[in-house]
Length: 389
Image (cartoon, rainbow, N blue to C red; front, side, top):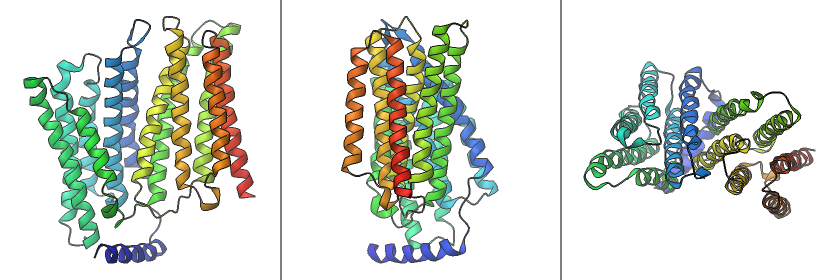
């Protein structure tokens, strides 16, 4: 039965693609995304609290959890709009309500979060209820197809299941001191991944989904551009100009690398559930947030050299790892082969070795980072141009 539904849906999807225009990213989606620009800044501000020369493990764990939470909320909303968005008044009202609730989550994003725990988790639970309610209302539509209904019900179960964990986390914290936030995030991620068969019944509009993900990445780069503005606040000197230029080049090289994948290598006409693509972007955006903070750390003399070096090295490697993994969504003749992977692995090994060797010389360290970033971009550019020829 499942096989027949998949086949019928694929046939209707192909015919629908010929009759319907490609879904465009609407202005309401961009307005909604603006709140996440603010949230990115709030999350990154956690990493500015330094103890004993670097970020404490407790603060970094808080940062990881709130970052994954926010990106997951954005992903849930994006999937709903992609599959069921109609630009209706009801849809706009739900989006604005969630924007309002996200302010409470932003306010609760603090190093000493304990006093804001109830507010943060209540807002989180209400947002999940809101998204799940949209799916439930969609299931009541007389136009819903059997395969759509199966997919909608599964998403309701996942989103409201995560909501219940978030609600339970409030008394669990007060009565037992248990923090269930990691369990809620993990449940949402793994339940979506394990729903592959059901989600394949209703493939996403991949051009729309990939554009939404790209815009979120662009917003994240916007936060990075704001962060490196601190390099230009110092008095003009050779050292200040050098570090500001290097930091700017790192941002440019990272952006060009993503742009090359998106513009020339990604197959935006794929028939896919989009879940793996969005999961890759969750960690891609997470790595960009880390790089933003790492660039701010590089000019801070109060931060210990070794952890500072390891942080930017790990963040850059994480970014390129997940960027290259998006190659599984490349056009068939552009999917990276073994030779391409080996070249980048060797380059990454050399980068790590040089960063560790020159960990006490930030002048050399930041230059090595620039060379590594642009070496990756150049290899991607030449690879894409060769295959397009």
